[in-house]
Image (tube, rainbow, N blue to C red; front, side):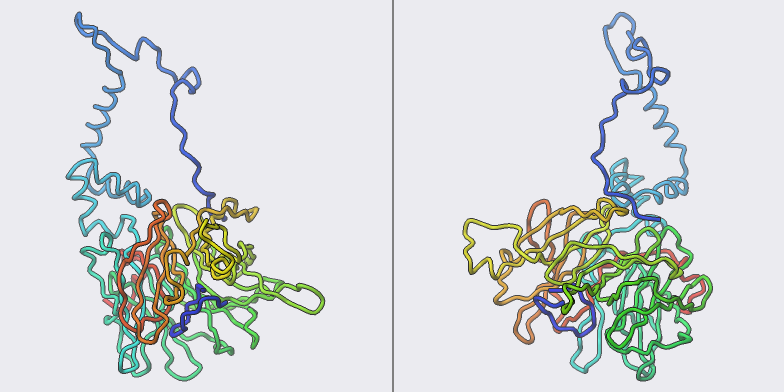
Length: 455
């Protein structure tokens, strides 16, 4: 099973600066550990009240003062403060009071506040041979979401349908072919229904097969985005990249900065100002044979800095994502990591285990195994095929799509809770659904597309 994303690609079982480190365990604050000048005298820690031996911490006064100060904060200032916090922290502040809950939930403030995963965007083939786009919504996050996943707000063209290519932090990259061998791009925001069409590339890509287009948008720098079109030889090896910048409104070309022979094969994620794309590196096994080694290819927004990051070996390339402050990678383990008492030689030969890794040290390229589960224990692989989809950005939840192996059977979006080790069906997908399956976090700001053609 792969994380490949070409539209119409059939399901297969075995196909082929730096970000912050993982958060550490929180330490309990102990005032006794403070230097002497910052410690409060013991006499100030308690007080007697008129003959009653009632002790109360003096910090209650500080809490009252803090509460009074908080009550003087304007709504705009509160929203500005909350906008700088991660999503899970904002959720906790909903419990402060009913006014704060209503303030956070107000539609007018969503454009500033961080959002969470709303669902997975996907495509299905209609009876007429066209394409329709859908959102497999996560119930809690998608409730009340005014969204047009079918992208009907995009301009009608006389050409074939738009192709859904990538999603990155609320923006979507779509493509269409006005003529054979020519690709045009549109970047849009389905939450605001704004879109813009990119100018043609000055030098069209000569390799038409397994084209690799990627989108990079950082909400921390919301005024612009980048689109990447990797240039390839006939054997699909990367020779360079064309990069569109919405800041300049133009394409620029950069030769590859890699000495290795790399083929781009999978998903991408923007981390630390660099795009990370799953790729295959050709490595000489001996004097006569070569073998593939999966890597992450990282490059900056100008195509000047390139590097490769080794990833744990799997049966084939996996998927990459960002979750809870860490770069994650998931793939099918080359051998079962978990052996049950009911396993025999036959079952182990058929075993398929999903291994989920977290990059603990970016500079040293040190991965730690975060979780693994036997997918053959939760799905009947004699009747069901599957595809890895992605990670929840705020929870220990992993998504994949399961689909019956027989023609015409429906597919389902399935979640795996790593902590509870529990499988849940999120939603049955439309008939004839095909890749890509794109995790989607809504963006309610119009800032990245301020001069867009759409309204």
